[in-house]
Length: 317
Image (cartoon, rainbow, N blue to C red; front, side, top):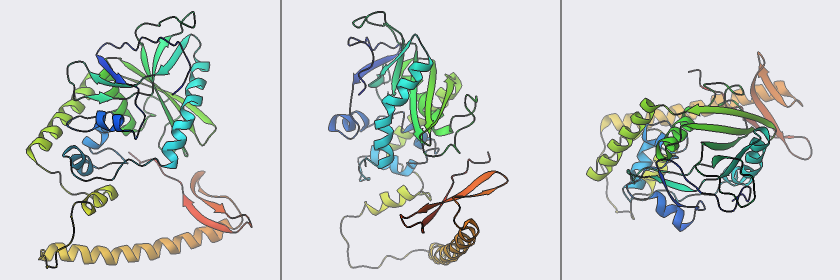
């Protein structure tokens, strides 16, 4: 946690109750997120917009069924390590404002509604021990290897929709009405964005969350989708194996067998396309088309190619 700012920060927001400053992956952090609650990082999954968790997996988690445990991936680790540095850059760009670690909050009345913003923005205090009073805005700090999913610096619609859901939820929990984004892309491209509270959007998310939690209470499981984490969640549900046959429908059997054949054909086509692109790159670094980056080479110490990696392309929509 950052040591920037006054030691006696008030941690006051209009609608939120502070639950504490909890470290991701700890028992206290898990406890604040489990049960019939919805957090800001979960709301995009509720409405089917999360690139990391499916609605199916979240339902199992909230129902107390087996799901994969939290994993501290390199991306999460380095995002956490760089958070203070990026937040400090934002403070330097905004003299007179202080970005203090926010902690985990619940809504004052809707206790099931939880959020852990990255920072609370306060007016800069005059002395080291001054209490800044009520926070004015939220600051969300993000790091990303590529900028494809982000718009131009400062663009009104520059924030990916899943992060917009996240901060809309955070604002709905805390009662603050503006979120600033400080984003570091590729280790050097610093950008800022602003998202203002929208009451209509917030209500859509809140209503969806209430319906979702009601489905959990009633045992109404979401449909199975094509997300990888849905498959991983299903794999965790059986306990052991019985020596018996299970009859499935003709349609499902055909779908599985056709998908297997199509997957093999798609893998061959992908390998063919990789070979063609890599051959054209030669000893270059990137493959581009009409100034759009398509793929890039990673290399070994001896200069030979380790892999051809795709650039993530922003959805056309």
